[in-house]
Length: 166
Image 1: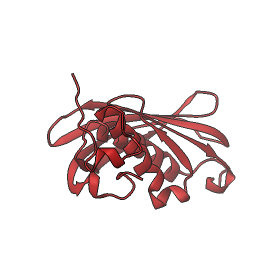
Image 2 (image 1 turned 180 degrees about the vertical axis):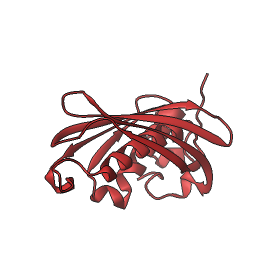
Image 3 (image 1 turned 90 degrees about the vertical axis):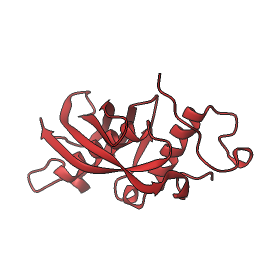
Image 4 (image 1 turned 60 degrees about the horizontal axis):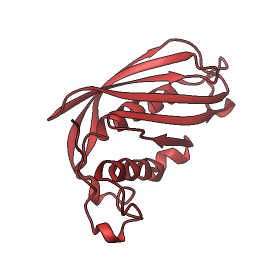
């Protein structure tokens, strides 16, 4: 059984009051993702349906193409890393995780349209977490996948403005 503690702070002041600790943690992580300045460059939406899983949806257009007319690898990396990261961090309620390694496989070119990255925790519970992610195009075809390792940082989630209650 997976247990996640609620975010720190006064629960009565939280817009998440009344939600279970796990659900409140997931919504706080989603707010944290949305607050990251990098996501102004890569507009996208994170959802965490349950512990150890995440989904990022985003629209791809020609502004992120390389010279040969397909999406640049930076987009693959960013979305796959984030999906795997948040799948892992959904299991950790006190600390922000950090990516320590990430392997990426490009399986086909990604073109304009809606895309989705799905993350899934694989292993680890104490020091190092391992998670994978798969990237799909608008037709539901796999275009890339990656596996990452993540470890606990010194940053308390509750100290991060995006995570703390709005």
